Length: 539
Image 1: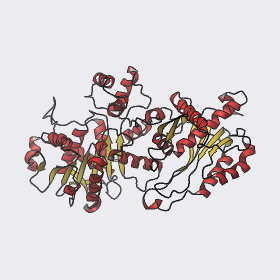
Image 2 (image 1 turned 120 degrees about the vertical axis):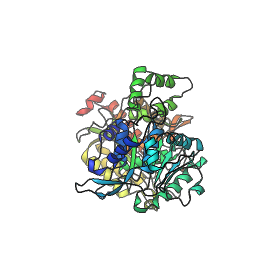
Image 3 (image 1 turned 135 degrees about the vertical axis):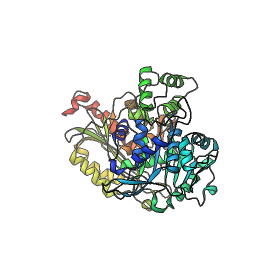
Image 4 (image 1 turned 60 degrees about the vertical axis):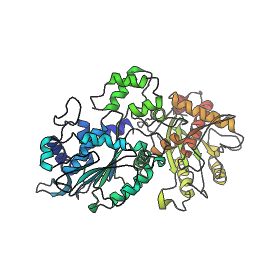
């Protein structure tokens, strides 16, 4: 999540009459205590950040329905995720947390959940034990007496019907349950190999059976490792699709606070600033100790970024890492119709098996190397993707519109599977282009075959442009996803990029289109009036 997105979330609090959170906060203040530490037994004091999370998690719409069907809280190690979720388990078990109508002033009436079944789920018993241990000491004596709380190590009961129960990675054990609330612990570790995927499928099925649709699940996790396909990664990808406008629903609450992308782990001032940003208002975390942990010789850079900066640190063979790409993100730049730009295109057609590759059209401003997304066409998920074909007419219309809207001076396109269309573009636009791939074929730029050295050089120049911050990009979610999907592939000619495997649904076509657009831009600069980027502002 970007720093701008985090700030937006942090500033946002629902209207007072559109959240059940205020009643929840009042109940916490009266009934819960610190379960351990120097303040054990004292009334539990929530931080401002925790207050905001509760107000948002219990947000309702105009009909009193929950705004979010499920959610994720992603934070750095030591932030206090377990205590926070222990609080929410206690609320769902005993406190007012359901909509009971409107009062005469238009504010929600908040009532207790009838016969609650709160489940704490994890892929191993140790993770559930952490939360259950906290629940042993979180209820005040007065609360214990009032509700008749009966503490147990694996199940907690109360006088009225209801319980808190631990469950681990056994989908059969979950069969038939109708939970009213589920805490999903450390979903960054829920993978197919340990039963995490099967467990998540069963959990979603159980939650869907609830009456009135009020049962929900909340995940807590550290930053996931891309490519592991953990439940946390799947949820994150769904959130990204919501931001791209490609999801049919937007009822996921995703709350992450992370360090800025340009944190330099070797620079103490930069590292301290990043750690302070990632810890939020978790004042109990000592920055000196965190710096020492990051600089410990046994802590890898990728682990340091995941655990202590809450950054999604890319796979070890990633071509570009997320913090590197995010460091050159600039949403303030606006490309105008008079700006000379270059284009890059990578096309595809329907595949006989697996997910069809994407088709992408990416632009790059010549004067400063600002890369921006024009169009990316991808096979939709689920039934909508059955028999899907690349909308060729729509793609061609986008190319035509781009030439009408912008001052296009160069256009490099991989002709594989699009030879006829690229020949048409060359016939129509070739003479207008100031930068040409070749004299005979001004647009055709093969990325396969005998051009391996040229491809390696183009990839290297784009990569260096990012690392040395000689280019920027518009932050488009789809382009970013494709860039981060790319994996390094050593070849005899040098470093190239590939998907994680040939049939992978994680596409990289927009990344290659961006490389072509940037290569055309470099060629344009080399051929420009004074061979300086600035001279292209009015070329």
